[in-house]
Image 1 (spheres, rainbow, N blue to C red):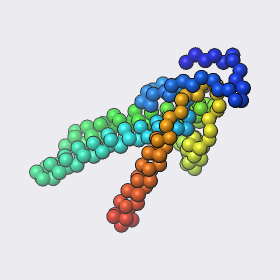
Image 2 (image 1 turned 180 degrees about the horizontal axis):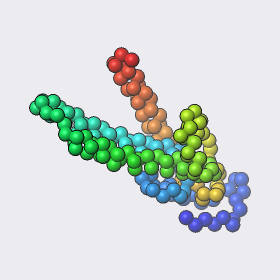
Image 3 (image 1 turned 180 degrees about the vertical axis):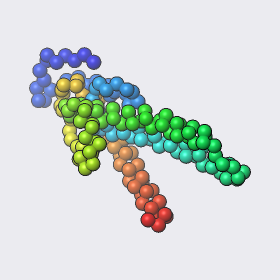
Image 4 (image 1 turned 90 degrees about the vertical axis):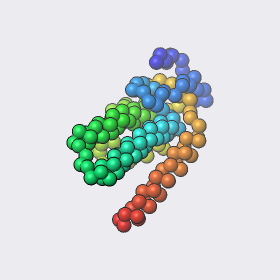
Length: 177
């Protein structure tokens, strides 16, 4: 991405916005503002959820078939299921890392800061920082800002987080934990 960095912008003047980088991409260039970061997290989470739900359904049907016919699942089948799970989990992990790196770019921080997610306690602080801190206004070391996404994604994300928490709590109550 070529940037005209020679033009100085005043506090009240903004550089041109660029289109939000695609969510399901492997390019680590660009920036995600807060709303674009939430949109990316939502899309990646829904992608993972849909694939995991389909895989659980397939496993459930297979388990029912094997138990109804008093059969033992073959080790090959178990390996295939694990490989299917990894086939989507690894790309989704890359997309999650990418979304965090692009959000860090919006804060004018280097992408290697995402490694802080591997430190217990610090990861929660970093997550809150990524969701709450305003990005750099105008150009920064990583380019111009992208057009902000609709606040609808924020509302959907909050509702889905609440529903997920309620489902988790209901499952724990049902399990007697």
